[in-house]
Amino acid sequence: MIEFQLHKIYKGSAFAHWIRHAVLLLVLFLSSFHCFLSAHTLNLYGHSVSFQYQQPQINLANPITSPQLHQAIGQVKKSDISALLQQLDSISVNFGMDDIAYILMADKVAKLIYKDYFESLVFKYALLQEKGYRVMLGFAPDFITVYGHLDFKVHNVAFVEYEDFTYTDISFQQNLETCQETLLELPLEGRAITMNESRPPFFNAQTEVYKIHFEYEGMSYDFAGHLNQSLVNYYRELPAIEFGQVYLNYQLSDPAKFSLVASLKESTYNMFPSKQIDFLLQFAQNAFAYKKDAEWMGLEKFAFPEEVLANPFADCEDKSVLFAYLAKEVLDLPSVALIYYVDNHLNVGVAFNHKSAYNFIYNNQKYLICEPSGLGFKPGDNVYDVKKASIVKW
Image (cartoon, rainbow, N blue to C red; front, side, top):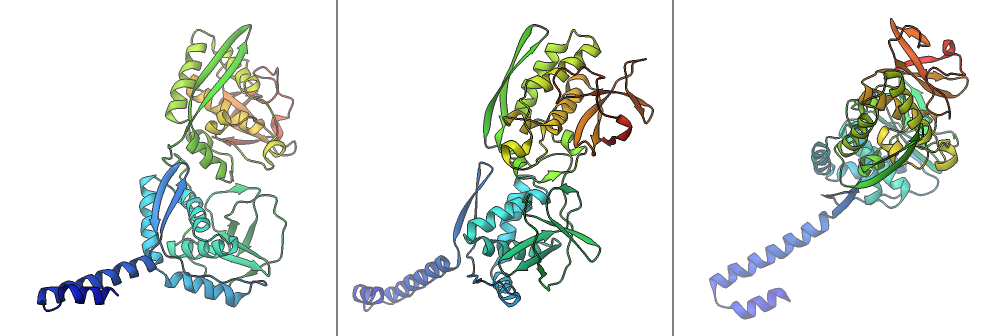
């Protein structure tokens, strides 16, 4: 129809003949472009990021079999996956993302492209393998798991040992029932998934207000400010990272830090050092309602300082992290975590150079035990046997 109309209008003209063919080529090009590229917009912790990719069709049916998976992975790798990786790499660089943040983004991308959960897992596996990570695919007739080799330790998630490597379920789901899986026979190579333990990514699109009321020795204190909700949402998707320096390195975001730390410094400025520690300890004990993670969110999750300000409840690990962070930032006092595995408990030893007001010595440094999760405990009070505690520097 287009060709007929053009011929009718421009008949008898060489210029018209050229125009006709140019228009036809343009129509064909646009049609082709539309067929092979689809625009996708991803919500990345409040940031709207876009990429283009035309997904190949993946057909999985029960029972899931090795030939199905090989065919599906082959279809993904035949697509323009390298162009997608370039776009995702650009997004990653823009937000200063490490590998674990990239893994979480890849999961979101896969679920955005493929609505079927198992299809999204196959796509995520192929994407991460093309990216160069050491990943492994396990499957049962009605189940698929994507495993990745991490160079840091996480808790409470499924893992498998294979050929001298530990592979962790990178969906990071807790409380999963174990099932017998078959390893998909594909080359196991690539690099480990790493974590930047010095700083978090630069997510900052969303903010929320925090308000904290606290009473100490008959006086009322009110603290308020803004926190980085984008980072809070990111932290909530992270697995339970093993306790270590990362929990204090991932400081409060600048808005939260400038408001809370400055206010606490002002409140404790004229106090003796022992009274300053007691003030922060009671702040951790009383300003945040205690409840075990499993009771209010259904899983065990170690919280970063920013999360503690955002969450409605905090348990012993959460309060200990916040107290240790504030002791460092407000009073410039380093600390260690004391983990009592038999008692499933954690509290804090604060470096305190006093002749008699200390509980133990570690690496020639005196430490005062502080119990952030127990109400009424003073610095030095401790009902647990410190000799049975595992000491973790952070």
